[in-house]
Image (cartoon, rainbow, N blue to C red; front, side):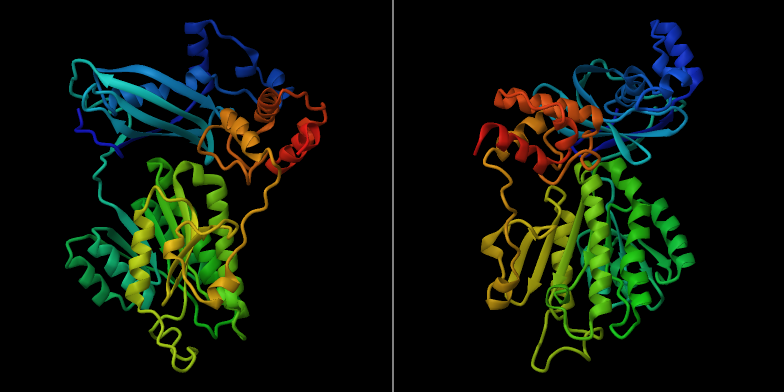
Length: 477
């Protein structure tokens, strides 16, 4: 038995085979051709045999019974939602994260997630406890285990630069182990970090070189960091190719490398060091600004597809920062931020696992936080930056699609779950909102409003805004 605390994770991977289904069918009598007959399955929307849900749940039972909480465990209650069909002969990765622990009753509440090809296939919750605990046999582990107090590791690119080095030192001071991605010259930074007692991994790579990026990605995947801070930046005078290789391709490839580890933990943060220049477009900075914008598209993709899995996407946009990078372009009389001020904010963001994806502006006036897409009001008005420049640049709120938006959203969430992105979602955009989910969504909306939507609404309401519009037409504003 492990001394379990909330945040502990059990994980495993399993590939379902036709032979396993044959044994399952013999034991249960379930010979549904959709699970084993290719010709029959080809006539369905799946196109190939799919794994029965009961089989899909099997590895969850193994994680509970053998890892978390372990031998002696009994399941008290479950709530599972199959999100997508599971294919045979391709790995399914399971993650079970302890959400809460009752000291009085001994009941553990765990969130279960399973992915195939990084697509969510199973979402659920399990309540379990232990009766007569027994040691776990070493020859049948059942899966891997990460305790709640497992060391946190952050990967930092551009670790030799003023901001990257300050971020590394600040993370080390906060107790984070580090993987420093650099082109050389980090001996002093690494030594300073190690003096705090953390472990430092050196990953030497030039992120503008595809082969170097691939090698760095392989190393980071093996280290499985909890956070990735992309601080690398090409010189302002560099050409567009170098800017895009550094900002966009660097973030794209390294974020892709660390994603599986974050999905396994149901937690992680990918943070881009952006710039206030993205809002003001200084003359001559077009390549720099465009590359940062492309890098932000990586974050939006991560948030769209994996925000619901606990992977946060954050862009921090500071104003001018004191140091070598902007020394030649800072306006006369502009002192700028200290690298340590930027680093302090980065540590706050990567450590705040419960916060939403967001955009953070940092200036000498303070901090302003917005939704990642810039479409929502500030989350903390008390901490907002002030002044004409900040007010002129402030994003506007999202338009309300319909007077019935909240009720439509509540109906959709009853089908898809409470944690999914609904207002920006739709078929193929939101986990679980596929063709089958669309039928359930339409039925839930009809029940909520006491209406009968036309048959064509199945295809005409594939996005949330379209669904709100059709409802408004039916019931009036």
